[in-house]
Image (tube, rainbow, N blue to C red; front, side, top):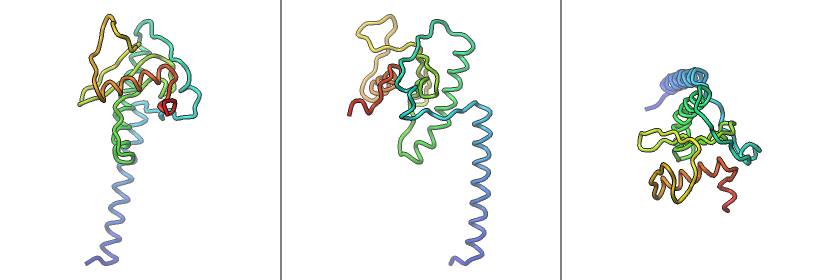
Length: 150
């Protein structure tokens, strides 16, 4: 039987737990340079991303930051939106570079200057949902949004 004292204790315990989790996430966010994901109607999403000519420290830092953002956002997307973040394009974090980070089946890959072609120097075989994920993220690099297909 619930009484006011049990309810009060449970409420206090919940508040302390929530505060601790929130504090941990804030520290993680600061330590790993987690930035907010750019959302529509921000004009950066309509721009065409620039090619990456060579991989230097700034590109490696960007890749590591995008991986951290993908890991940070995934649980929230699952809990609050019922979906999982599987990919992230650089324009979604405010950087107009042709880079995609994708996480699938516990494996994270970074794609630099990806294009959809019939024949290419280096190809990735993709089917079904993986192909749709790659196409969606490459669309972000070209300034195309999913609402454009509606």
